[in-house]
Image 1 (tube, rainbow, N blue to C red):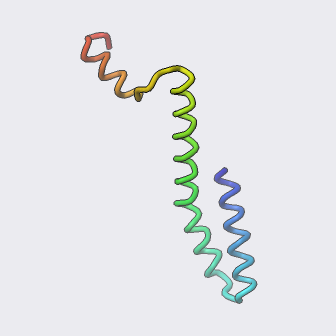
Image 2 (cartoon, rainbow, N blue to C red):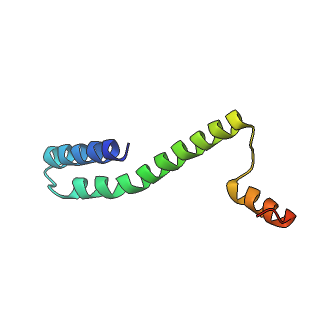
Length: 76
């Protein structure tokens, strides 16, 4: 997914630079903008996957919460 976003932003930036005659400007801006876009997409994918796994297992706690609960009971 990261490669796809970077490739699309690079190609879009190169096309815009060619169209407007601003050689490195749009390419650099699009590549810089691709970093937060990629981070948001990755966060969304991980969050959805975590929700699906939690729904399938019936476990609705975070692993760190489970560890803390075990430590309180003296099981860890």
